Structure formats: C-alpha cells, structure tokens
Amino acid sequence: MKIQAVLLDMDGLMVDTERQSDEGWTWACRQQGIEIPPGLLDRFKGATKESCRKAFDNYYQGRFDYEYTRMLKEQYIARIQSTEGVPPKPGLFVLLNDLREKHIPAVVATSTERKTAEKILHNIGAWDYLTDVAYGDEIKKSKPAPDIFLLAAKKAGAAPSCCIVLEDSINGIKSGAAAGCAVIHIPDTVQIPPAILQLTKAVVPTLAYVPELIEKWNQS
Image (cartoon, rainbow, N blue to C red; front, side, top):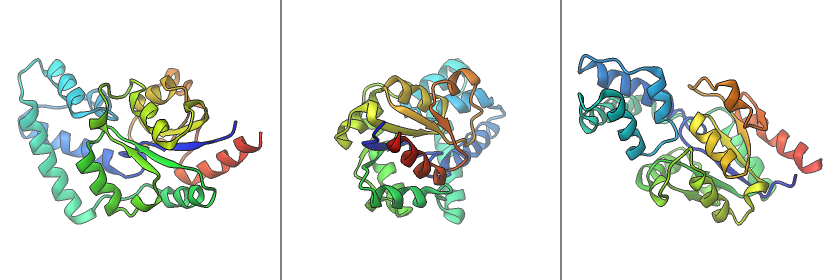
C-alpha cells in the first residue's frame, strides 16, 4: 500500500477540544437542572452543528432549547480556553514534520465550520504544515457519511484507497471506512465498540506512532 495522503480529523485528534466540549455540554445542561448522557456526547463528536441539533432535540424531545444550551456550552469553553488555550494532542508535530519531510500531503477533514477551524489551526501553529482543509460547511452530509473524507482526498489529489484517515470518534471511523480509506484510530474521549474497531487498520496511542506505520506500509 503506497500512501498518497494523510487525512486528519481535527477535534479530539489534533487538538484536545473534545474534552473541553464534553465539560461544556455537561455544565450547560446542569445549569438547566438536566444531565446529558455519555452516549449523546459521543454522538456529537465528528458531527456538524445541525446533526448535533437533531440528536439533542430527539433525545430531549423539545423540552430544552438546543441553541440556548449550546450558547452556555460555548461560554464555558471560552472561559477554559482563556486560561489553557487549545492544547495540541501528543505527537501532532512529530507527525506533521514527518509528513512534510516525506512530501506526503496532509489534509484536515473536520466537521467544524471554516471560521472556527481556521482559527484553531492557525493558533496551534499547524496551518503551514497542511496541504488543504475540508470543512464541515462544505459538505451536505456529515460523518458518518463519507463525504468529508472524499472531499479531503480530492483536495489532496489522491485516491481514497491510498489515503490514511486518522480518527478518534465512532462517527469518524465509520466515515473514513465508508470512503474506502485505511483508518487508524487514536483514542481520545470515546470508548469505541469492538464492531467499530474492526473497521480500522490499526490502533495507536498517539499520533507520534503514525510515521512508523506509514513507513511500514509503504515498504510492504
């Protein structure tokens, strides 16, 4: 397998924002006297704002306002990020430097809208390492549909079957597999069921382990 490009999720994969998001949603719901189950939080990961809205409304059956809850969540996250920023995930720049040295395109495939994603990628210093970015507001169907990774592969100028997808979420793993890419799972906040892990080609603890896999697969 000759690797033509690496397609990276952003939240929870490149940056430690899923933990911040979970804390924000939990806090926002508690301000209204409700709890949010882990299963619903997991459904938000890798999903667009509209998909999150549908999942929220379906679960709470219209008893609580999604936009108001999201506003509270964003306020909480802003307070966290004012002190701790948006921390890059371990091994991110080990991987990005390796891809740059090997001239392998690195394209971000994120469900986050362009304005927010660009700000994050610039702030953590990753922007100049990237070949391109596929944003959540560029596609019609969010993860677990394959659209975002098919778009990212196109932007990389690579066949999906020759791309590696790096993902932390259930939705993301499903999306990468549906696109026909080789998926590597890097664990974050989501417990991945065995049936979903079967869709992956490998599981590694941090992004720093990915260059070794690329080298191995390119030689095989």
